[in-house]
Image (cartoon, rainbow, N blue to C red):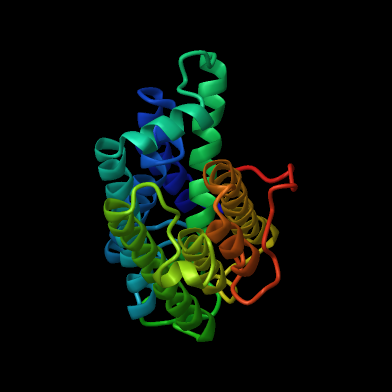
Length: 285
């Protein structure tokens, strides 16, 4: 995978190190802002024509690779900013995080370091398809030295845009709804499509990134990096849906409106008859 992957890992490690201040930040603020920083780093590498492979200078931006990098920055800044604002403004969110995620006070330093490095590696793997499209030497547009803007690049870009838009709308919808109905579950707008549209948006975003690298990845380890990034974040999102389902059942389980909503609205996949993942204990998130 080469020098470029080490750069993205180092960037993610530097940013996500804020988790040493507050443990949950490894997977929240550190996640969003790490992705944004990686996107910015890839833009710089591409614009500078940086030498990131053993074959010499191969960097170069095409319209799609530039757009993919920009979208990583947009995605990361939006997510990180949203999580930061929610943490500062929402007492109920802070209470939920304290109950469900360790605050780090009792976590040994070696475990914190392992969490930090694992998170940084995951963030580098998630974004690796964009790196490989930016830097690989096969399937080149000879004028720029970067992978050509083919069907995988355009398809991945389109899916990524849909995912970011859906996640943004879902977060805004729920925040606005909770201001007027703080004690009711959100079942309006995109929440009529699935019960966790923000997690669906997340899955779509990273599916788009993954697809964008299909025709750019070269070799076993590049495919491993891409697949691990996509599979792990998808698993985590299903785990997040499970955690939310359990919390909502605890909070609203006595409400017949909620029971009807939960029984007829898929948990995460639109139009699929998957209404509950609460019993799937192997899911985490």
